[in-house]
Image: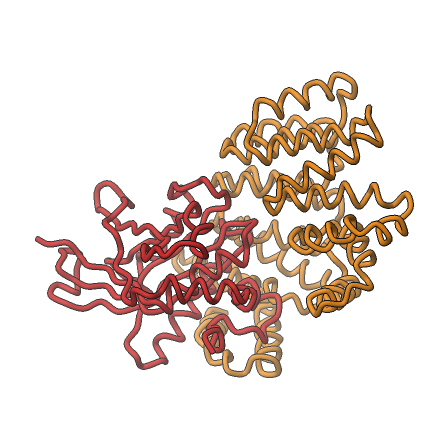
Length: 206
Length: 304
């Protein structure tokens, strides 16, 4: 029995980090979108590859409440069903409120569980807030997220390093940060405030 | 909670500043202070420029001390602790025995993570003014900043025993409870808020969301009522509340079907109304998203 492999695309990664940077005073979260392939991709026995290809930023306020989470997941699911690319909800990302908090909180675990119902191999990405400050400065290629996977017995546990599909992701991110592109990120909270705002962020990378 | 008119003015002034026009810095800083919004990066940068320019600073007259305080806090919020220290220094020279300036000293300690020193500063100040709400709230803030959420809850509960009309404090407590997954206790906070301000739509909304999160037939029924109240109190366009009515109505109907309670019926009239408002809003403002609502709205219709 092997380990599932997880790969994170630049598109998803940058959205996640920009979302967190836009709302530095609060926790943020969102769903991961991707596809599962490889042997045993219908179950949790390993040897699957989970590619996280995109992310939908969800909330920066009241993360602990259920109704809008359910609503958002329904709509994302519906969008993916109609999109014909064969993508599914593949995980959850979370950034804690405090800079030195690198625990996956009970709340984050709970939401992770909820989202894992869509995909047994779902991964949870927790932003490492301590590393956020250094993105703009160093030449580090390491992603500022930590992967958690779910073990049937022990729940969500730190998994190995997640692979960044495009190694230059951090330097692209640095460029975006220097032009304050995080201000353009739209999440589901923003959409509920003003429905003309699109949580798919179609123009974010133009 | 900022009114629409104020928000428009705030955005306008911000755009001006971003474009490099400095004429209305004072207006902007004053508005931020009045509305108590968090715009620390802009306030710190532009406020410091204002204060460091002798002619513009002197034009402020006595207002300059308010600006020093505001900029000190903004600087701490953006990790510019050196600048904060300078502002606090200026205030200390002008008001050497001030409790208010002492608080800023305590906050500076907090910003550095010198928790014990901050506690000492506040303890000394509390000796002189034991019922100072600001100092008591710093205690809560420090606990929260150190990740001690249950400690923050305890301190905040104690604070509210004295200052039970502090709505912001009740909301903060609700948020703390929610992050601890203590929904019932968070709901209690909202009950207090609604008692205090029965026409505030956002309190009804917050309560409804908690009730829905707690689940079960009774709570869902109550959630639907409070979502409905929110719609009424907010002029009928609050999107969260409209969705909330649909979600809770659907959930109630499903529960009733599962338990096959034939005697209990739920009026779905409001669900139908909310659905049509949502459809109308999306058609006009977000037509590409309208198809994504269909399954939800159809489910609601079929449940009735």
